[in-house]
Image 1 (spheres, rainbow, N blue to C red):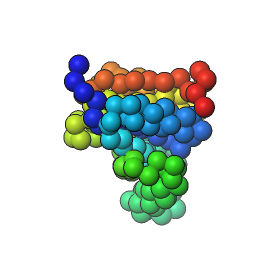
Image 2 (image 1 turned 120 degrees about the vertical axis):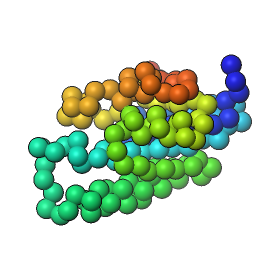
Image 3 (image 1 turned 45 degrees about the horizontal axis):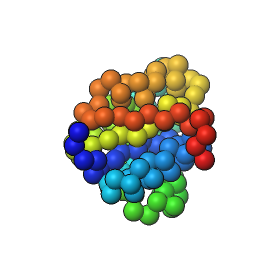
Image 4 (image 1 turned 90 degrees about the horizontal axis):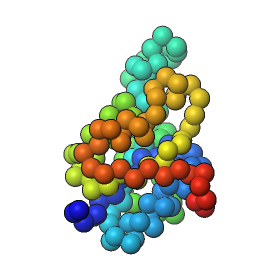
Length: 147
């Protein structure tokens, strides 16, 4: 097994995500690895038929990305050495593409994030990433005693 030098942590800004990023930070410190956090704004195209914004779609998506970048900055204030990236598109596909492009050695992600309509419509992001990632994926159940 190769050394773990680059760890990717997909986040959704939920309380569960905070637990996962803290666990990944612990692992990164033990491995001497760099850590990156990514958030993917789900492309509005995937919601067509459900919702029509009052502004042009591209403008709406740009505003969503800008808002997510601000939220990411706040979310990572306890992890100042963590690189951050906000992307637009299909969540699982963007995570997988980023991992391949950046030569990530390990993806650390939660088994549970936000639930509800998104999960019903898009399935489990973790499941899709595990099946297609270009590197090992460590999934963590945030309900099993992580602080």
